[in-house]
Length: 222
Length: 222
Image 1 (cartoon, rainbow over the protein chains, first blue to last red):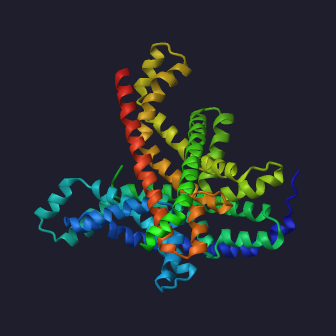
Image 2 (image 1 turned 45 degrees about the vertical axis):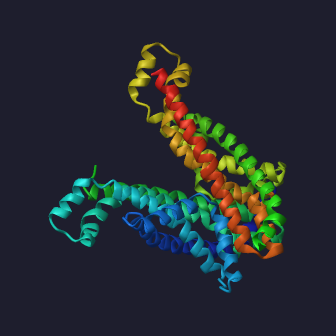
Image 3 (image 1 turned 60 degrees about the vertical axis):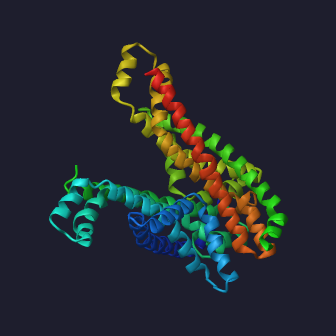
């Protein structure tokens, strides 16, 4: 049998726990950026100005069909070529935030499109301003259908944070790599990283599923 | 002018990398499809011994990061006496990861076939195997082709991660050229465009063609 050393596991646990905190922080920060930027992308695609909606549409498509890891390298290395030095954290947050913003913009679009046309017409006939129409009528109804997709991408961004290790963000994978090369043992650190991911992503997904049911009920949908 | 010189110097390497990426994508797609069909069908069983293992597989591979899985298969499996060559380890990891997502698509696709189809097939005294092969699966396939198109693009993007275990794919070549020339914008920019062309120029049209083909076939049978 292979040799799994429990004392080594206990020895490296504190470092991995600390790195887990940074991984969660990276995921939440990235998701925050993605949520705001994604809304901007989604609304920009709904404007009638072809000079705005067409380029944004193409940009979102481009981001969605190219690898995140390459985008991370792009953001990190292209800056210095033009004299803008970005340290790993900001570069990583920009790349991962932008990537997930394009995913979330699609989720938002789907949510907004699922609001029946009559709702828009009713808001217009009550002479609500566009802002009030969005805030009070459309967005509250767009949230329940978008919630499932948003939840999936929250778990998704968490699982993509290991890619930030390539530019030196000291999250879980990066920490596991350095532990591995310090002690010449990869079995325990890599396995533990896998287990930590499972321990966080499975319960999160379950909680999100329950929340979705609750939100639907609150909104009077099914 | 400078850009043309750059292309002349490094174009061949980038093309070789792209070919490796395409090869990886096709191999892992084949693996992912086989695994997805098997695990998806197993998940539908009512026998715990059949759906149990499939559920564990799907949850583990969907609950952790692809990058963690690649590292684990490449660095940890050898400790169990199973040493894989990096290219093999890479495509197996990507195939198994996307296979888990695909299994859920297969399961959902089969469940979406109306109950009457099952009953009609049973009424014609078809055996369960023939019912699945001739009646249920073709219709399920038609339902799940659009999400499979997205999944294949995710798969193509996923193959970029095997560059981190030094498989010389497009990502790896881009990184290598960047480290010798420092022309980050050019090299990463070209790589991004190449990935974009592969997903929108190869995968998307192929899937559209397949969807039309399947629609015709199922239409004839109905």
